[in-house]
Length: 618
Image (cartoon, rainbow, N blue to C red):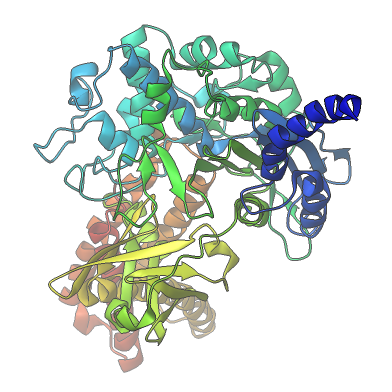
């Protein structure tokens, strides 16, 4: 009996020691790790080939890789995606910037509270409007106050990509908000932080990342250089994968296969999911172990601690890492390029990480859907009788991340307008997505529009009974006054009418010219001016159509100057031509001709006003 007890004792002891760990082998949502792969396989099968071409998914638990698997195609119907296929990180690259910044802060070489101009050349930041200093914290929190720009961030050809310094100088946006007041997601802010790392260390940012992150972690299948010259093998692998856009029945090949990022610290990494997992693993060392990325885990813990919040019970920002609303505290960052999507998420308390990368533009079903399945949802809710009436929040809102100057202002004002409509006292509708109030002023997205799947929670802030802003965590929404909304919508409607009138005028004139030729009737001076006016308006419409197409195809800002010149010439010519028509008004004998002239003059002048008012000249 004693011999049996001696045998059983260590077995029972071992069981009691390991039992808690065996129970803990689940995802934060409660899925058993042993069932993880079949669960992910089943979930992914619903979308691969239907909404998504290919994906690479990797899962980490307690420092061990539990899943590293590819699904679907790298090139649709031709080459299957594999575990060592490379995908674009997009904005998940930003996590490397913040890690680099915290490394320098740990070394005492960078102060997060200091005015960043102390680290930059005198030629930088010439468009600052406010006296309040911009600090590294402002860059981390995306609240330095800069407007957004869509030109000079992506380049279609490698030869067009300038160095980081030149790109920052050319790209500098205007400062439209006081620092620290409004969160407006900013690629310029992150790229500036990367450049500061470059200035402090005397090394190109990509060289710094290689020496202090990639090499220590053994990330040999990753590249951060905008042209991938830092890792030729990754550049070669990139040739064996293509990006796709959503299609009606299945994904379609993206016309933007290779774009190059000038502000490359903000989104240029390409690599494997396994390498990405190595980086996330280093953010969650085991007890008693020090992260390879830092000299002391105190720095790591500080980096992953909340440094900004819209309000205490709402997800915030942890030194550049975004907090998410899940069953446990989670952090991470998503990313999108012209034809790829990614989502990196960690739960430090669980030492659990998920990497999702797809060769699909704007993909949400895997990047956000699978993430929710594995990390679980936060079900905390308050008492509905204490909630404010949802009607208090009705109205039009616009994303704080927008252009405020230049020719993209009107386009972005329209595309980023979000009307909030009331369904009942606790429910609102935003672009077809239903949001239900779960806590005072906090609404949860319950679905209805896949394009808004990236928005999980929406929180409103009121002052003196009026909404002053709302937040989704990593950028704010600002209420739009009725007057401003009317101006935007009237401008768009008027612009559409101008285009339609120009087309109609050309058709009418062609018909009239045919009739006049048969009659042999000559054109009077007013008719000639009329023709010149609507033809110039047609030229302006064509010019701005080409401008829009070129912007969507990543043309450089300098190459667009010809379009601005044409708009200025039209804005000068139209009023002059209208003046001559008014002076020679009586030379048009027919009533129909006078009506035609009035319409041409009115719509031509309206077009000129829109082009000037909405700054289509710069």
